[in-house]
Length: 328
Image (cartoon, rainbow, N blue to C red; front, side):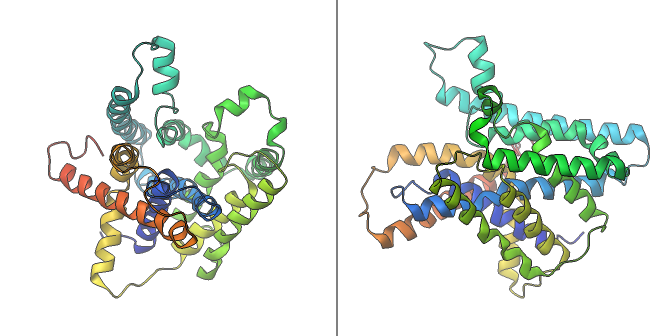
């Protein structure tokens, strides 16, 4: 089956965004440019959820019997959990402070979404796997679907613009509750079933509004979760819909192969990039580059490309080993 170039493009841009957010400071220092470029890439996780729901729905609807669907969900969950557990254990052994560890800290600090950069994504996916049938069913009942969309939009508005008034307990949960990601699952399912009105590909440029929203919030001193804001929600959805609805033609075989390879290996890149950053950070001296404007613009991208390339080498090694399908 031919791969979707549009999907691979979204996955490539999104995984580069993940790497940029995590590692763009590797070779340089913090700057406004680096900060707002990181904000621009906040579409990355929402887009991954949309892509996940899009392909999950395509496979799920092929299973006609309830037992087949249950087995499919369980098998996907088990594979995801194995990947989560192995990499979380690796990060635990690398980051643990043995003199302070106890059972509570073991679970809450290292295995519940706070252990390493990106671990929370697995916590979200675990919830979405088992809630997928219910989310899918909601789409069939407009009297539930439309009020729920309104409620979710209000939640995003409140989280985005009134975050400081939230109780501390809710703030500690961050963006981990699955309810925040339900709109993206809706979109993925609707896209898979071709039930969304087609929009122009140029609408994908709406993502440039994300750093503007962040700038305004920062200007007025408003704390906010970088992923749970109205502009991130709407921009990520429109960006994904615009690209997936409009087939992209790339003449260069080499570029298509690169996009395809990155698209196939986003999981490995996602789980490996934090440890690559940790290793490189221990090797590369801090502040060795001049803090001039040119470096402030180029170094974040050079850092991200370097990390991404090393992650791709790791992907190749894993793919050629017996650990392929276990670690990724």
